[in-house]
Image 1: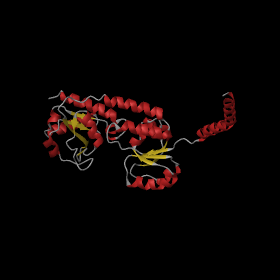
Image 2 (image 1 turned 45 degrees about the vertical axis):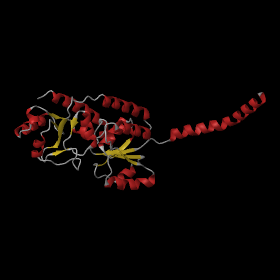
Image 3 (image 1 turned 30 degrees about the vertical axis):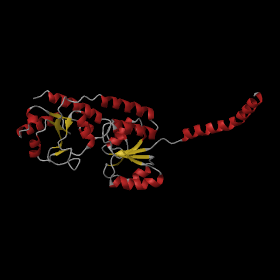
Image 4 (image 1 turned 135 degrees about the vertical axis):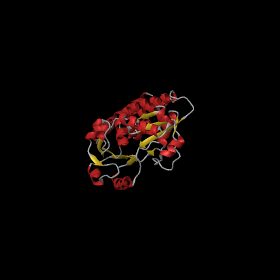
Length: 288
């Protein structure tokens, strides 16, 4: 038994130099590895990367990426619809992130593929998808701990959403006044409304943002009207306008305004919008 142990120890000692060399090589490789270089092609992608703790890795973005405030200092590569493929390539990205596929992103993906640079999309369909996207970005960018902390906090807030008492309220979301546009087949917004005790009367529309008539809104007679992107001054003006046209929600002060960027950017601040809308729908229940 002692002889076998001695032989085993001798073999272990002979392996030690090679093991030490392998460890040194691994550590050196980790030290020499270049940090990620991320380009975001949508404001929500920018916000998600920051939420994952990797905002400092963004080397290029689009014009409307303005949140958090430090994102305003990132070099621009386009406007979200059009962007410069050549400029993107000169920035040597290791990951490009868009919102939804488009002709522009498909063309860019073809140029990135031979370089081994992935182009991924961040298009959540429910509030629960947002923490998952943050976790995925953290895993890709090496910021798992920060991403996990943010994801868990968002999940806690999503679980804590308090809907208005039943029955569900019909909610008309006005995103443009002239011409009049609303949100239609938008699974993410409709998921948010459902969690708050609301129903979008245009949820079955064939498109995400249909143009509608004033007459159709008056006929539907929604219990609540939410204005976006309007502030307090415009809220008062639109309430007076709808009241003049006979909308019951306007006469009963069941019209609310919400930050457009929170509502329309499918990222972490959508949870802020959900909390606001849930509170508005609870308030509207108390109004005749």
